[in-house]
Image (cartoon, rainbow, N blue to C red; front, side, top):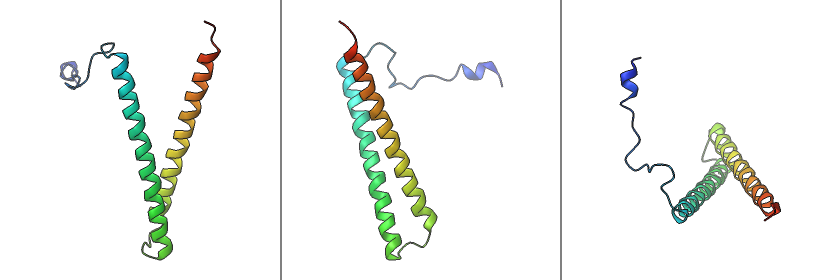
Length: 99
């Protein structure tokens, strides 16, 4: 691989340089990211539930598809809970700091 090929890699035009975003923009960005993530988690849970209902009704014969959807939604939920726990733990640690 030639080094000259690496020079062609550039940041996408929408990427802002680090340190240029205001606190309000960062908070809004984080809030939208969090909202999108929770919406994706909810959709995953609904999809797993829908596939389970179809499997029980006999509309789906492939149990692997149902199990993969269930495991995926379960894993996403566990990740969300762990992230929540870390956020709460961080908040509590900040609140214990002396002024």
